[in-house]
Image (cartoon, rainbow, N blue to C red; front, side):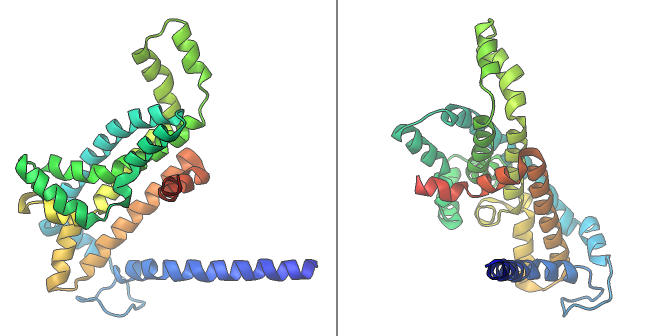
Length: 276
């Protein structure tokens, strides 16, 4: 019996290892290609060079879009945090169909294809003169940042001890004082993770940026797409490696702040809300 179980365990580990290798192979290949000394993307070799990383940090063709993406991502993260925090605090303790409907309403942008959102937002923001501006693109990216921040903050707040907040209110603290001195420190890890994930989503977002940005504030993913239409430069692999690094750092920080289980719950929130 133990032998059968050991073979089953071995087979599960083998299948899991093969699946992980299959998923990680393209990422490893991109990072490997980013260190090529060649002028063009070619099959990987054992010769390594950092020339393309030097190019992307010195050439304005890449540094300007990087700054645009950075500004928009910071704005999108701030907007997401401001909108998601009150929603998460209000719905963390709520129950019933009405609460489920409101939660689903917060999560709706997760289920919307980027192309549909981009076309609709382009028509709407053109009417209110926001298309092609930093706030216009940041608001669009916040549609996906708010659900992520909402899940992170709600997950932390649901596991927090409410007695300290209630005690502060009983002892005479006003709602604003209790919020900033009791509630905010309790949910700060969730707020940090939510803002970080919203930042990464905005920094990597392509479809809505393609429709809503102007030449004066074109983001890095749009610049990469434009570059790939005319050439296949190893600089694209270097930038892609930077994106991969940012995503990995965000995941590690999230695990450090809320634990691996919390990160999985945040990442799996889309499926949970769909089943709800």
